[in-house]
Length: 134
Length: 134
Image 1 (cartoon, chains in turn blue, red):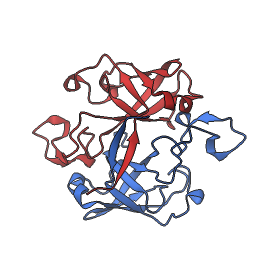
Image 2 (cartoon, one colour):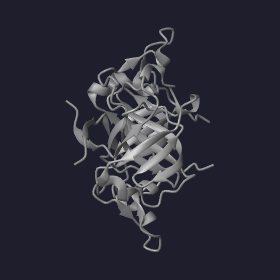
Image 3 (cartoon, each protein chain N blue to C red):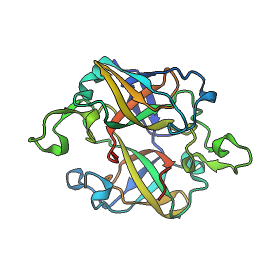
Image 4 (tube, rainbow over the protein chains, first blue to last red):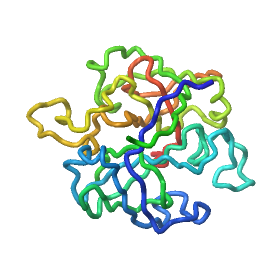
């Protein structure tokens, strides 16, 4: 039995992407921009963010299979069965997604960010300044 | 009240670093290597990892203050009060730490990784292949 912590959702993605099967595997593969609607309690934590900044967004890929420990990378059966920690599969014990985005627009507790391959309704759990700003 | 998900610990860090106040702020600022002891249930998920690979390690900074939403960056009172999402502070609603490491050694369910600024006993919640391999 795994030790556990409670992860608090800080907001949700609103995106034109609705079908995970059709979504790009990574944001650099043609993903759109999306809105991040912050939960009211989390709005003060966004003070100081500015349009044009690069962020690392951590999502919770809520449709993933948390009990799948080995996969064929990129859903290609020709690739050998590999532990999920040696891949970027969404299926893993904690389906945390990492997304490097740029802030396009800020409207109160809503941030327009992109490119981001997360589907509509994806919970977001953290935002950090990207230390590798170009 | 925030929506919540249960985060499962996949292993723990064993490090010579014991005092968070003395730990470097980022792994690139002189952090040591450490052992990651995987939980037995998570060992199959590490199949395929190899010495020399670069990983992104996601930690749970269990000593952080989850209710602190604004901070003075780098603990310097001369820096203006800033929302934690615009910083790399460990204090934030979900104290997830990102660490880029290299695998130094693999010994069954133990991985020697570094450099990593996480203190001894830090829970680890995910490992991913670093897409920016040099």
